[in-house]
Length: 298
Image (cartoon, rainbow, N blue to C red):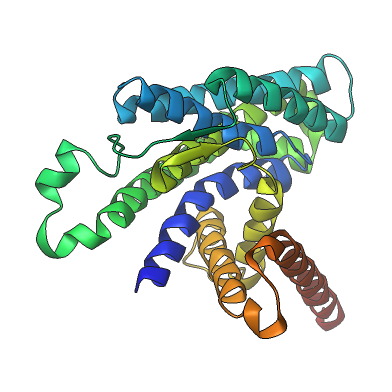
């Protein structure tokens, strides 16, 4: 039961990050490596604010706003300074490493015995008895569902349609008299805001911040998006955003199973990154094979 709860909790938290990666990877077709810096930035802000006895609920807004700022800067570097998309993300990811250290002042910040959005007076009052073991999961689920529907609403607005059009046909957007660069910046801002918010949730769930916790974030996000959009493509009742969140949970489940049975092939916990990269490679190969079968059948 503990393993299942852990997979669901972390899967949903990373699902928020995957929604951000979905915007950059699927909608904007922008290989944004900023997420490897904005994820720990959200965690860093949460750690500092909670350590200073600030309400943990305020950390959600602060982390999201900080993430949007990082996304805006990435967009400005790409759009205004004409730097290639991949390099823009690398520049911001590198810069954010130092920014995160500046925010916290050190590489690791524990949050033990501190109130979080999962453990506070409110949750202790309302999540008692049989619900207590599922308190963290319920709080995460409420936040993820709310964010998912907010994103669905935004994508159905005029600004959301323009965002999707920039990825599909930016010439059409330009012909409408809309600055496609501004739309890209907006998309990157929203994406990195969600990623930073995910980092904020992760730090509070794990009760610590570590400067290296963002390493490989983009891989997890891409794997979640690919799994969700590939496996659940024919699920007519599910929106793409729902598929991405489910894909994140499935990815975390695969990693958890791999970790559990690593000892069978003499692997240790320090080999986690290797396992993660191999799992992502398998997912990419499976996705490519699925596309080939669809094309052949067509």
